[in-house]
Length: 297
Image (cartoon, rainbow, N blue to C red; front, side, top):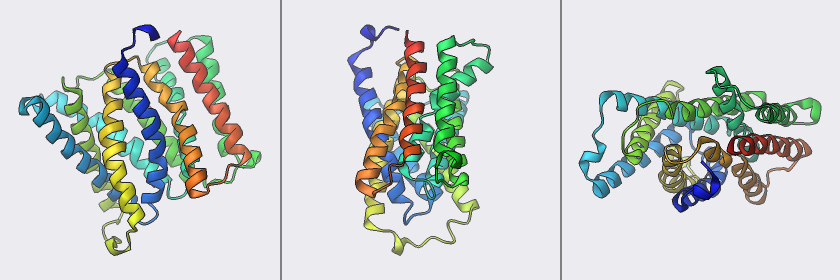
């Protein structure tokens, strides 16, 4: 699909994903300062999923929520990959990794998408392979102490795993039979991922350590922001884009979000802008840009 043929609705949805998802890394960092990671993430997506289901029923009628067992299973699988894996591990990782760095690590999603495509027999162009190698080099700069990076390896591995699972969820969504109404599908995905998050939090013992009286006002406000803007608006826009625009175009959010996230993290939370973050981040973004420009060409 050529850029000239892409509708205005697609560009609006892309802009929402660009800006809102870029800001969610900051909001997540504020939430986990006083709230347990998986329980808060689970509560966020269950709340957003229920609200979205109600909106779908009101706007399109209750019949829009009717799905086959296969469609429900597919939506649940994608939701577990995107929400529990892709988002939940980012939330857990941000308990020890700055929000800007987390966003830069997640920027590698298009790299993993190319790897997944290659694994299923789709031979990528030479420029795409070069973009993958460039992206991996950027990740090495971001995470290696040899380049002056000061990061906790456990947190970095969690976020990198999240990026792989997010790519797998995005890739799978284009192959599976999902609900005909993408908004209904998004609601089921959020509910599945949210329930998975709560169960994971309970299994980790977060419920026993729960101290609601210690939750800060900032964390509550950030959680509300994530429910409305991060989930209802941005996540739903992303899911709609997966079925309405080329995957390579949708993937461009990965090199816009980090710029927003790093800027907000530095301005609001005083997160340091070290040379590894600036240099490694620029290399990752350049690699992703090369991949996307090649795929769109």
